[in-house]
Amino acid sequence: MPIAAMFLGTAVVTFPASIWMSRVGRRPGFVVGALLGVSGGVIAGLGVWLADLLLLSLGTILVGGYQAFAQFYRFVASEVTDEAFRPRAISLVLGGGIVAAFAGPMIGRFGGSLLEPEYLGSFLLLSLVSLLTAGILIGLRVPAATPGAISIEKGRHWKAIVSQPAYLVALFGAATGYGVMILAMTATPIAMVHHHGLSTAATVIQFHVLGMFLPSFFTGSLVARFGVLRIMFAGVVILVGHVLMTLTGTGFGSFAAALVLLGVGWNFLYIGGTTLLTTTYTQAEKGRAQAINDMTIFAVGLACSLGAGALLQRFGWQSLNVALLPWLAFAAVALAWLGHRQRRLFKPAHAA
Image (cartoon, rainbow, N blue to C red; front, side, top):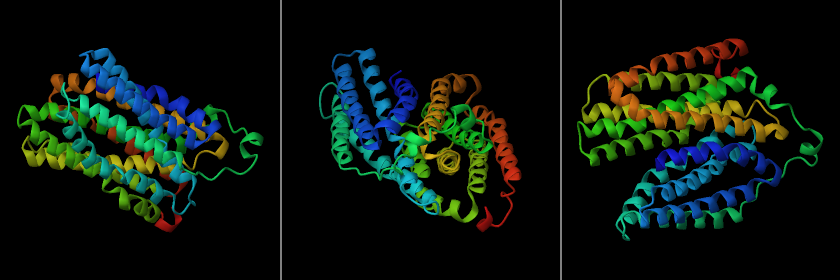
């Protein structure tokens, strides 16, 4: 329930966060988002202290709100760089997840036994890290848009933005990567309990997180060289590889290899989808375009998170993953369709 509440907080806050930041600027929005993390950690810690599940979930909802604001870091990277460097900038921002892969579990484990009751310290440390983040973000300077650009050019209606073929494919591709990743990642620890210990499951998840973020240091270069649609298509193929790897058995190697492929496939689709999305809107339209994109992605993530346990229980680990193949096939068809439409998918990289 607290984890689902966090995804709910992200999905609910994403749209208003984007619209509000388009009016007041990125820095105030990011600072407020970090302060949500501060308050969320304190309230969740209070919920742990009082053994109150609802209070704990309220705290994680606020932490999810912090995550909603943080999702827009990657868009800022795209907004302050030129078109040629944009994919690399987005990749490098997401590459910060490598730090999270080690620091997050380390802080959680350290704080778990720091205070009584257990995990109270973890949430208080979350508040401290969020407070430090807010202090850093106060010094953020984002170059202003062209004077008068937003006041004169109001932009298209959101329906006109969303109905663009490139926007739809960018959204569907990123949502596919995120949804498949959340569904399989959430089910993995549950599935591994039947075959391995909890520590082994934690190791596999760490491999998965590295697979998610380590490619970020070269995904942007691959996008610039081969074109965004090709990299997104490669992401779909890698996710199919994840499904096939789950069919090789339930040993540690099978789980670890499958989860690494899952992370890399997500990385290609998410960075590729974000890069493609930035080509579909103007400065005046970014608030609406980014908000609808991220809100939809996290709504898909919420549904997959909530459904993972039930689907695993009903179908089993391998059948659950096989059931993802039609979704991935549809994503591949959508990318091929857009590539054919734009006459770019099979052209030389410099023309893509």
